[in-house]
Length: 400
Image (cartoon, rainbow, N blue to C red; front, side, top):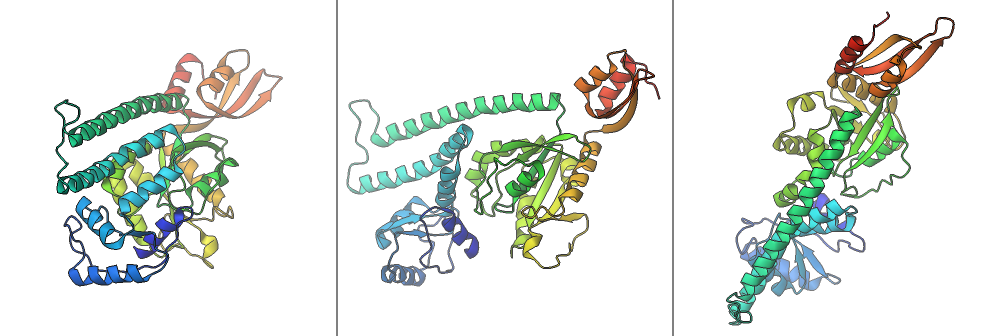
């Protein structure tokens, strides 16, 4: 937990950890999460350490009272896990949707701060003043504005969700299988997708939450079938639940995949706990059983471990960085895709004087055409869905 907290801070530009300490805490919801002795020794340590401009208390959420008390006692800005992760998200957001998701996730934080400010005003006797004869107090006006802002953001996100649903329907119509690549943050998902697709536009970074926007990249399997690899946001243990709610829409694509590939950083000391965390989040998202049972587990970063041997059956060991083991992974992906999408790989003999070939190009994936000019026919290797093949047999006479 400490290593991860340090990793979160180091992810941010120009932020660095000056010192760290592990202390027992009480219930985070209480005003004081530290006991009297711990709080005093912590206050003394902060006062004696040069260069401190902020303190990160690694709990999910601090109450407004705790936050105010700490900032008054320590004289610096105080962050909890929610505000640090939110700040990382804010720095890494690129698309309109990700920025809107962050704005939505900020609302609870703004409400907290509003309570804090109003508590201060109440102490000074100014918390219940009415605004310009409107009958509304200052806090009521600010709460209403926050509510209106939240509704506008949710409306804009719903429009984007409908648009993505339409795009997803179009992808399904074109029958491009969808492979969602997921895993704990910084496990190497983007590096793997870059290696599988040859997409040089992808620039992997060695950071937590380097990928925040869900992106789609086309790649080819050994049979020349085109698949779409979806690069998803990374998972994190104890990700504040309000952030999970805000970003659940970006993970919606996972449910609509044909296959899941779970990437694990096997060089990480917490790799077992990371797997538990990822599987727990997927369970909470109610991912269909068919996807969970067919999920391919990939052990990545074997370049960091000498002579790595997979301790678990049905897993693939790879190095995305050095592009080792990718051939086996592509074969495994293809086998699962053919199985899950009920596609068939067939050699069909077509009569070139009929529209059979053009029909196959339109409705299936044509991999190879061997023309027999003397007979005016061709042997066509295709990947075709069961439904399309049934339709093909009805429309044309199939020559064996």
